[in-house]
Amino acid sequence: MNHTDPTPRQARPPLAGIRVLDLTTVLLGPYAAQMLGDQGADVIKIEAPEGDGTRTTGPAREPGMASAFIGANRNKRSVVLDLKQGAAREAFLHLVDGADVLICSIRAAKLAALGLDPARLRERNPRLIVVTIQGFGTDGPYAGRPAYDDIVQGLCGLASLGGGADGAPRYLPTVIADKTCALFATQAVLAALVARATNGAGSHVDVPMLECMVSFTLVEHLYGAQFSPPLGEPGYSRLLTKWRKPYATLDGHVCVVPYNDLHWRRFFEETGRHDLLRDPRFADMAARTRNIDALYAELAACIALRTSGAWLEVCERLDIPAAPLRGLADLQSDPHLVATGFFRTVEDARMGELVMTAPPLRFADAPSPAVRVPPRLGQHTRQVLREAGLDASAVDRLIGLGAAVQA
Image (cartoon, rainbow, N blue to C red):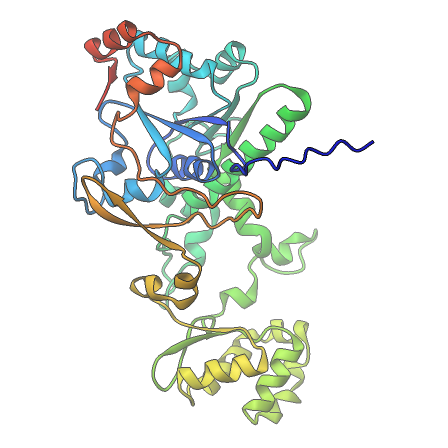
């Protein structure tokens, strides 16, 4: 007999009930933890007394609440512990006892020196999932070296791919390594949670930035070197041609990507370039890839003859992927983002209105993710330590010693 509960359960965020300790700074780890908080996890940001350095990076209406910090720390609580002090480390271990996940970006040697290495933490809490984020894998010659986004962009090949018209290498104008590796870190957390649901045990997952970014970069760029012996050089030619860029029109720029055979046939017919339609260099995907410079040069020449609006209308009619070129300042007025409610205005008692992006993932059977203002430094220290089992006098003692700070 099917005993179906007639009372529908209240919808909950997918990670409701999961507690995450965020022992990271700058952007990679905080961004990963923020994504978990967006989906309902209780994320507790553990900060040193001076706070995360991004608290002072960028414009701010209030000391310690700068734009870079706000961008990667919503939906969290903040606890300040000076882990150089034994009393603070002991309090931290109480937090570990009740945690599901610890995300940590402290280098392994420093973590071990504090007596907080993953093996010890998992011995104390066997269900704990420890995700360590480091610049490099622990078994190679780079192990233990410091790494930031620029360093990893240079090592993984991206900076050499980002060269401008003069051919000089350039970093991409976004912290692509930090943000991409944050996605790897959240994947690690979720995979480990699934494994724990099956076997009941926690785990330790290492997220090495260089290895993650080489994997990311070579998905398409290993190319001819995918084979042994090689069938060509690394580097996907379509992405490396100087003609791959937004195309100039009579009054601006558009992004147009004819891709498959049908797209190109329709484009050549629309522009009256029947000579290109018959050109063997452009007959199919393989031929176009071999002759991508010539193909995209012809595309640019055609695009230059009409206005941006005209091309957007043509491409919509022909079902060719196209879009207007947006600048950063244009995004808040983009009609699609406006219609989907992607930007949220959040009111804060001290800072006034803040514009924040909404979590992009949507779960059909869960409520819309909350967007809570990032915490002040040490805002929740007393609350969280009491939840961890410390009585009021013990918390007062920690604060009196300077081992903990309450905002």
